[in-house]
Figure 1 (cartoon, rainbow, N blue to C red):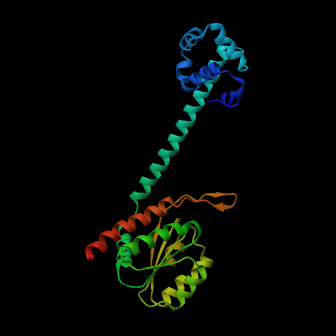
Figure 2 (figure 1 turned 45 degrees about the vertical axis):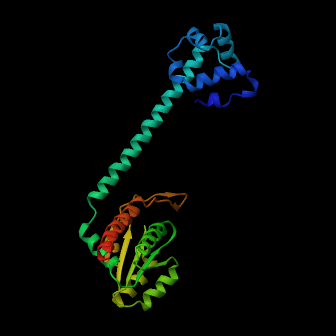
Figure 3 (figure 1 turned 90 degrees about the vertical axis):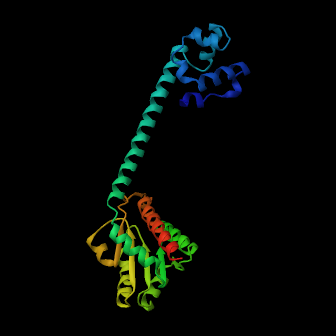
Length: 251
């Protein structure tokens, strides 16, 4: 209800007045349709007691009470409609994202995830979430893989990695100065690299052997990345579903 009602000191009300207030707060849509006499009759009190109750709340009378309730209902409806619009927009954006998921690239990546070569999965900060998820499910499916969260360690692995091994990197922003070395070392050692990132750029496309772009909307708060990675997680889920079917078929 309106801030007016949340500021009422309940201790200052009698038990009967608390009952009256409780009914008003639980039935706002009914109250705005009632007259003073209607409400008083519903609460089994006289019109005078009802009027005095409104005045005790600091109102001029019943008309002001109805005005406050009407205004509050309008604000709630406006807030609900705004929320509904935001949800619909997110759903539309997600459906658009699904329409352009590259099926051929997905198939190639799934085949790499399901082979018997050494597999390393890396992600940091918020991007570690899809990395950990992928790692956990693949190991559950007996596809052994190693989660590497430390940046220096993944760089070290890339320097001595065996040919045909696979490195998966999940990173929303892919800072080139950080990951360039990993991709270059892997290429020199004839290892395969998979990049799951947010934005599709020419630079990102050239970094890894296989790329998936989630097109999550960049979002920061006070200079901090708060991108939800919802599309990146969705891509990871799709990879997991396909890999699951592939691995179960092999068994």
